[in-house]
Amino acid sequence: MVQRYDDPCAPTYVLCSDFHPFLIYKVDHPQIRLKKKKLVIMVDNKLLPKLSQNLLEILEDEEYYDITIEVGNDPNVKIFHAHMVILNYRSTYLRRILSTNKKKNDGTLTSIKLPNLLPEIFHIILKYIYGGKLSFEEYDISVIIKILTTANELGLQELIPFIESFLIKSKKDSIAQNFDLIYRMSFENNSFLELQKYCNDIISKEPNKIFNSPRFSSIPEKLLITIIQNDKLKMNEIQVWEHVIKWGLAQNPELSSDPRNYSKEDFNVLKNTLQQCIPFIRFHNLTSKEFSDNIIPYKKILPKELYKN
Image 1 (cartoon, rainbow, N blue to C red):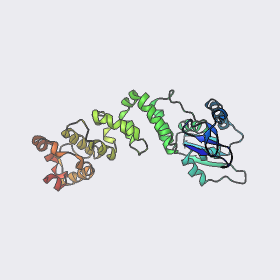
Image 2 (image 1 turned 60 degrees about the horizontal axis):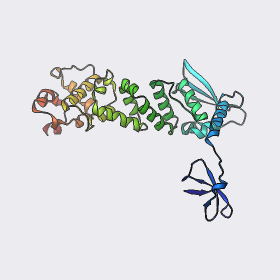
Image 3 (image 1 turned 135 degrees about the vertical axis):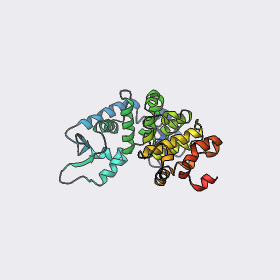
């Protein structure tokens, strides 16, 4: 594709994405013949490291900044100096904040607060905002996950697939060791689609990674539903039922593990807790004995129409 950047009646320079995204070619209008000998290189990758270095030096400059950013909560709070124009163009989240904190004409510095972010993670992100470079080799997976969630909050969408890809390709062992936490984090919003897919594939093959986790009882209802409605889940349906009951009881620790001891109110409490999960149990996959031994004791928590079916 060729795009013109000059007067239509004169020779012009165009950005030609079919050849190289960083090269600008000189052409004759209207034939648009490429003059390879008159190739003008406007940007060279070899020059970018110097630009990145200079921008990072601007970040460290203590004289020309025009905004202070207070990050964190007591006792972990740090003040950063920055430049509104860079923040405005690099982060959609910061742009929205700055739109309500216009630069003052009296020379007073603009100041914003980001109490929900960690100072040490924000510092890493801020260096990326200025220098355009980010390396994860020196960080463990817990720090990388914090960078990922902070990048998402700051609207740095270009970083998300980059970090997801790094995690999936280079941190498989770490993901396995922290699987339930990674799985839960990936479903906190719909920005981490690659991680969601990767975790779902693992869960399908090894569901006990989440069901046998000591933190299983604390997973959100939405995540539990996502797991049990997975048609590729390699687990007997009666086991799925048992884990759903286990999760429901964990949300109501006052309930006995033996339904024979339940009052009407106890059944109603458990029914209300599991009402969004039960429709995804495949009761037709159970044997008669499994249904009799495991489901009938809890029949009072089942919707009447479902039980009749």
